[in-house]
Amino acid sequence: GAASGGISFADELCKKTGYKMIKEAVSGTTLVDDSSDSYVSRLRKISVDTADLLVCQLSTNDATNKKPLGEVGDGKKINEFDLKTVAGALEYIIAYTKEKWECPVLFYTNPRYNSEEYQRMVELLKKVSHKWNVPVLNLWEDAEFNSHIYGKREEYMADAIHPTLAGYREWWLPYFEKAVKELLG
Image (cartoon, rainbow, N blue to C red; front, side):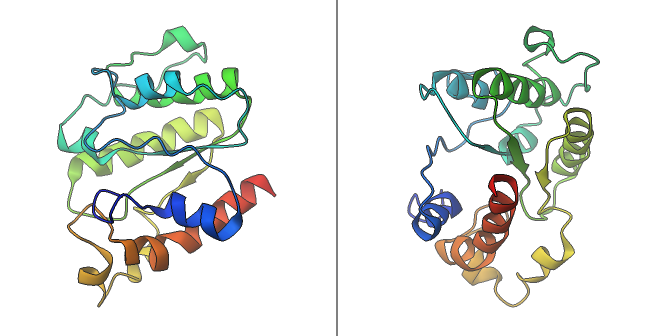
């Protein structure tokens, strides 16, 4: 919710469906574990004992900051991943979630914007998803989703990366509601 007053699709989804979520979003952070507020570091600090689903963004900040992609590993043990790479952080998040909460993980991508780095991250995420059999809400490659922006860019996006509140409510929410309901029943 960086460009929407701190409100995102997660808040709107909870309001609409009655789901309860912990929203652990911190502006400017990365998947790659090279700071105390990385995705990996913050994931380890979540203290709930049970969860039904972890929803995780393929961070645009890793692309902007040109973090190393790394490679999808052969193993699935939590201590086998290079957390200083995007691949290692993605795999760690899946392994950690499965070990701690035994719940599904849903990754999602940003809508299409001009970034070769992010394009490579989307391709990497597809490989990780295949290895671990985890779903991806691939907004980057979803032609129907991206067609909704035509004629509404100023209303739906504050810049190339950050949706406005209207963008979250009118554009993102239906896609997330459908994906979460499919996973949770």
